[in-house]
Image 1 (cartoon, protein in one colour):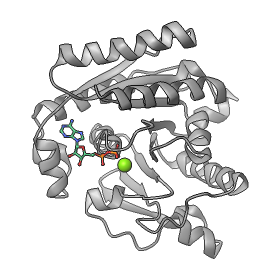
Image 2 (spheres, protein in one colour; image 1 turned 90 degrees about the vertical axis):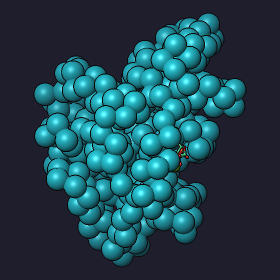
Image 3 (tube, protein in one colour; image 1 turned 60 degrees about the vertical axis):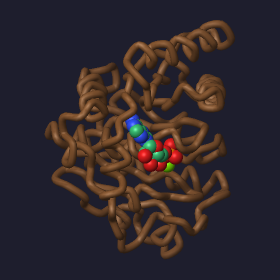
Length: 257
Ligand SMILES: Nc1ncnc2c1ncn2[C@@H]1O[C@H](COP(=O)(O)OP(=O)(O)O)[C@@H](O)[C@H]1O
Ligand SMILES: [Mg+2]
């Protein structure tokens, strides 16, 4: 089992429960940061309802996962190159065509992503908001689940729900927390403590803190310009904070080579 995992790139899924907390932006920036360290990275848009990774990055994919699936082509046909060592596997932008896929199709797609992962060091997977089967299956399959949370109460309760279900579906020990849009590092630490405390008290385990990303006006600026933050504002606070998460991910774990 370990040998099989070691042959493919490390699969990191990004979830949040609640939408609008910065999951897609964080996924793209984390993938970009990893690629800049020399790793080969595949960024997967696993949002079957309203995929928008390509929009955020200013990409026009020739085809997406849904189209290649319908045509019976290999999933790899929907991969496009975005930057050196950074490829994107497009979802189905805005059509909702992939929403409500049956579990058999989901497992087929999941296996296909695993096969694609053999060509990469990391696969970063931007999950949809909510907690449907697609989200839960990919989260359970991931080597690491990063749950993005902000200080809003609805974000905290949704992140807690993600971690709770992850403990049931997969390996609770593989879930970690990213606090996004923190007003300051201490404020981010308080947000983490609130969520971690609930997990400790009611789930019996404490997910580690994977990083605190400060709220930074350069983030919406770079999204509006459809230019990666690490290109447009490489030294801004949010960029520095994502780089710290990148460095943390580079530390070998039990599933790394
Ligand atoms: N660290 C941050 N600082 C400032 N704004 C942010 C930050 N992270 C995300 N945002 C804003 O939040 C919005 C929603 O982000 P997005 O990645 O689309 O969220 P999600 O994928 O969770 O729905 C973005 O358009 C961006 O302007
Ligand atoms: Mg999104």
